[in-house]
Length: 154
Image (cartoon, rainbow, N blue to C red; front, side):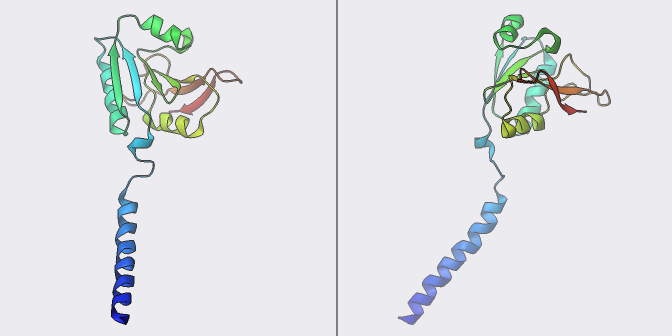
């Protein structure tokens, strides 16, 4: 009888030993925890496709809607004229305007500030999806109670 109890304990210990490395191998906040991103873009915009690839490489699931009526999309989502760029997206209830780095999107979603969203105004050549490093740019948190603020600087 004593031998069976000992074997059961060994099996339980072995299960725990195997479970720990498996749990460690799983990414923290696995992709299932990231909200889906919905992107509206002009059908002919290639840099928008590159930004979508950047988001997907960071673990986001992305749906794209091609539209020729980008001004209406931006207005409906509260993007100020001064912060507009080539595409508009929504993730986790926030608006993403332009080439916002995926890490900044993740930080926004983790911090959940009171704001409409993040914007990278214009089309800085060194922003994700643009492909020409070196030009400084800012990521702006907009629509918050304290007005627009710099969220990140590159």
